[in-house]
Image (cartoon, rainbow, N blue to C red; front, top):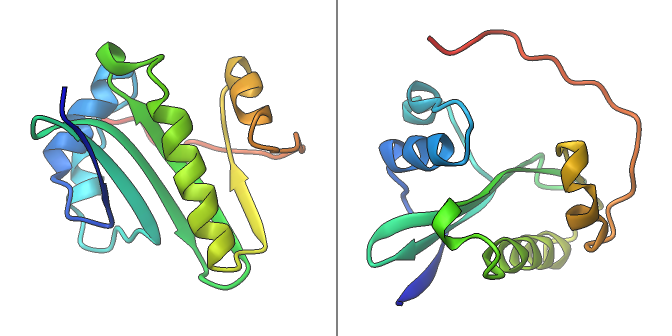
Length: 132
């Protein structure tokens, strides 16, 4: 198995949408095709040219960053890929002197995120539309 990590490379919206679907999320293909969609730093993981993992962040590039879209293809889960992606992302953000790193996750994933030192804080989130 040949697994490669690509930092800040071009990732096809269709590939991201397919991976989102495989992990049980909405596809959001149109949103990823939108030229306004901007990423501060992202990492794509490929196995034989197939996208099997992804993590993204948005940031004001000075004080804060938000980690989003951590996902790993179900066939490749429990192999350390998500942990590797988080470690790489956190290192990059720290190396670039980002003061505050945030992530929103499902309660069942709390033990995973606790391992990286995330503190649980009260926050709110609103989904404004359903994908058709």
